[in-house]
Length: 232
Image (cartoon, rainbow, N blue to C red; front, side):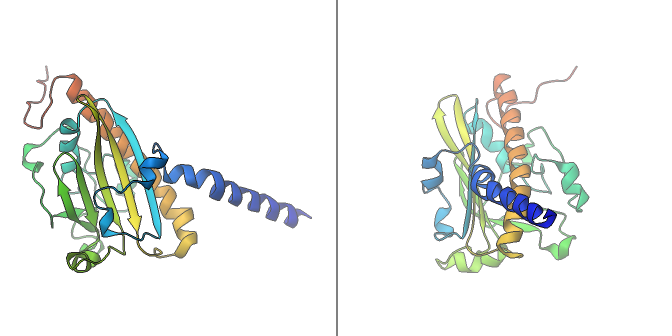
């Protein structure tokens, strides 16, 4: 009897996760039109096996948010998330909460490091596939670079940082991730590990970018070249 009850409870939890929790997690903050919309970068993975679209409103224009996006990367400003958790797996992630002028340049083909280049055999990286200033930056896995360059799809996945203006003083940060095939570990690994972990880390990153951009904008620092406030 206890086994039957445990099985029933497990089934109920699984059903609740798949039917209620997972859909909300995959579209946190996003509307149905956001999910269905074709965003810049989507053309690199036109037939995704998996997709997540998340959004957050920011009381600052896209020009004030874009500098923080350009700074992402282990060798730059980090990912504005739970660096302590990232460092548990050897990412050695910095935690930078100011604008660094030297980091305000990006180009298609640039490497975005997710961990020090000497870790994980140098494979913890993504490449910039699309860059539209103050609008969009799309990252793909290096394994897909040649395929994408010849018009193919990023089967290993893409990750897009998108700025959607609301008015002259506000915008939305939209995060889109797509994968063209089942990840390592199959659907179970995707549902039980990768998706929840990515949601937790990405949500924290979105909040931090919002807070940093709003703080600078409210202080009158509207562009990356604006001086940082002097400290007493």
